[in-house]
Length: 109
Image (tube, rainbow, N blue to C red; front, side, top):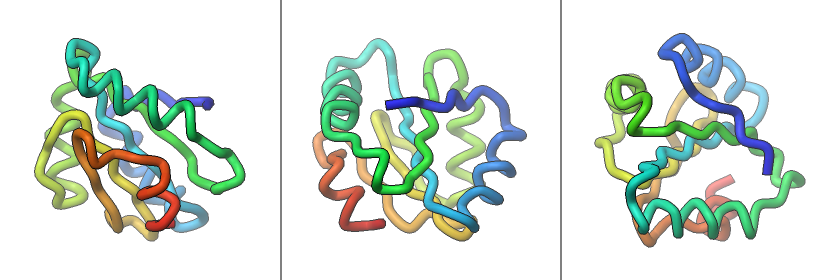
């Protein structure tokens, strides 16, 4: 799985634009949380590039202000870990903690 690192607020505008062409995934990951590590591992083990989703990875400990901006831009309350699926500039699916799964993401696409 080839993650695109989300490190600046400006990338949120790019993500909204990209999502007009194909869906975009944002994975909000806490590097100090075992549940987050498990959810990340499950997503990576099951990932399939043929789904046509561009994945972004946000390190919450290093870039917490970006997570706050995501909450404002996409209207989804912050949780950790959390995935958001963006299509046409809007969040069409989100899941957190143990609800994060590739199968759930597939159904939403």
